[in-house]
Image (cartoon, rainbow, N blue to C red):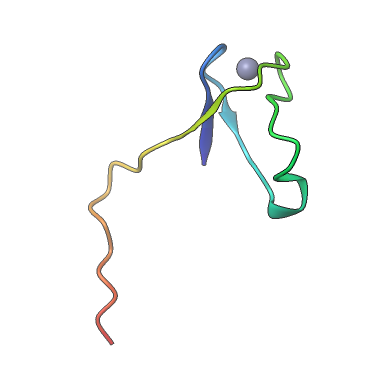
Amino acid sequence: MYKCLNCGKEVRLELKTAKKIICPYCGYRIIRKDRPKVVKKVLSD
Ligand SMILES: [Zn+2]
């Protein structure tokens, strides 16, 4: 999940539209990764 730095809304970015990173709500172009509060899941296979 990503967050728009302008309006702060959560923005879903799909790989298909990765080239066009823009906030669908306000049109802002700077989207930041929203860090999950959950501790990183460690892959231990
Ligand atoms: Zn926005």
